[in-house]
Image 1 (tube, one colour):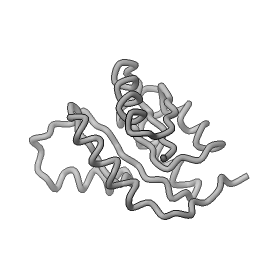
Image 2 (tube, one colour):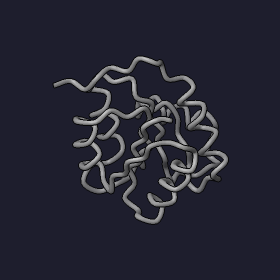
Image 3 (tube, helix red, strand yellow):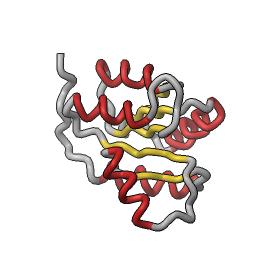
Length: 133
């Protein structure tokens, strides 16, 4: 079981993500915006952060930047409403630009989400650094 933080400003999408990830047996925490997520990241450890890219208050890029400055080995899945018909290389550029480990474009199937989560968590090292005081 992994600890997962889901950051999504759309309540309907957030609750759907929480339901799917929890059904996989993970301990799920959710945040309605980037500001709340950043506050949680400073005090809690997560194995995976699933964040929307475009949000009010603080966007997904700010969430990822905040996480990376904490020097944690937390995996990041950036979720975007971008078009799935974009060139394959675009997703790679997105992950590099956002320092995310993967990008998933909305709308996506639950099976696609489950596969990405499984791949990201399988790649996570066993020893994660504790939060900095």
